[in-house]
Image (cartoon, rainbow, N blue to C red; front, top):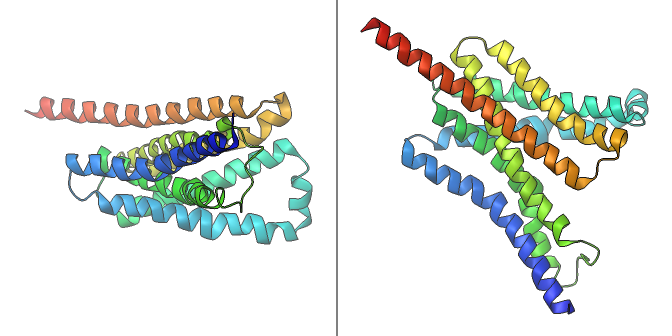
Length: 253
């Protein structure tokens, strides 16, 4: 294959990532807005919850504060403990922010569509900031010779965008779990469940390669399965609650 064709295909892979990272949140929001009004607020709240909990608090702590402590340096040499630490801190910061923003700024709005929009905003801004912008920059810099992707396979280039599909599914599912807890006035219990699910999902990304030499493809399969199971759980909780409400309404008629 000629160099020109190779560059073109790599550019297409990057373009696919950009489309997924920017397109899923935008298209998802437009579809939700057709179903109900006031969808922008939960979308923006979800995005803000991620930016504050991860970009402004957790990631700076991991990169600039914790490395100054001996316990953290020792922890990094223990793959299992470090994986659990990373997973649980991600769960604690993100799910706590999810709960606070849903209760404080989206008070009284516990519709399924509100949860879908909030989760889409949370996962969507993560996709844009962590993958979308980088892929867009790579599309520009690579043909100009400022970036070397000669050792990158098409599969590896596509993984960034594909993984964001799974991550967005997870964040929507986790949002529905937390929102269901608010809906049934058991927010602490369901937020703890979301933290544990988040911790399980993220910690295994460190533990599985260390324990079983799982490669990138295997990890992506794991992420896909866990993410869609969490999404299914969130939808199941809402469906069961809706059916119960309909039954209770019928009993009172």
